[in-house]
Amino acid sequence: MTATQKLEGLVNSWYGYAVFGAALSLWTNGIGFFSLIGTAASFVFSIFLTWFIGRRLMKKSSLMRLIMVVITGLSSVLGSIGVAKMGWTFCQTFSLGILLYAALTAVGVYMNVKSFRVLTDKSVKAYINSAA
Image (cartoon, rainbow, N blue to C red; front, side):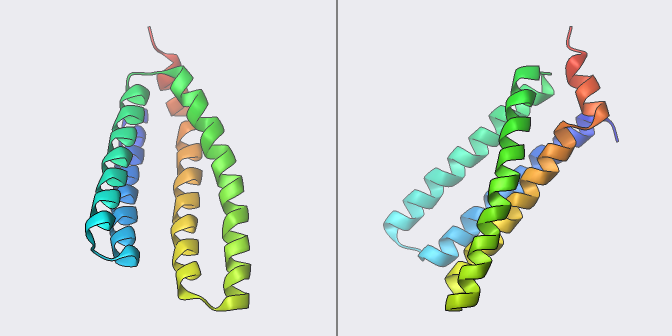
């Protein structure tokens, strides 16, 4: 795969994660007036942020790559700790809600690890550093 294909695949994965998060939010919060407004606003913000970051990366922004490497690295570590704590809390309380949020956080950690791996890939680094 080329660097552009890897970056496009990563951005598309984040779009899917935004849809998954919005669907889970609707399922857990119900379909009320304020729930719909809050979920829609969150979904639109997530899609816009993903589009903006993806566009900067495709235009070979080394600053955006650096920022995202730091953010995804920290989010991976801290998210893993959060999933472990939620898992422990689930073992103590057996609450299905905690288990659902732990699963969503685990998927988020997976997305951050995937992002970190793509952004630190040799071909992606070479693609972004080849900006003229």
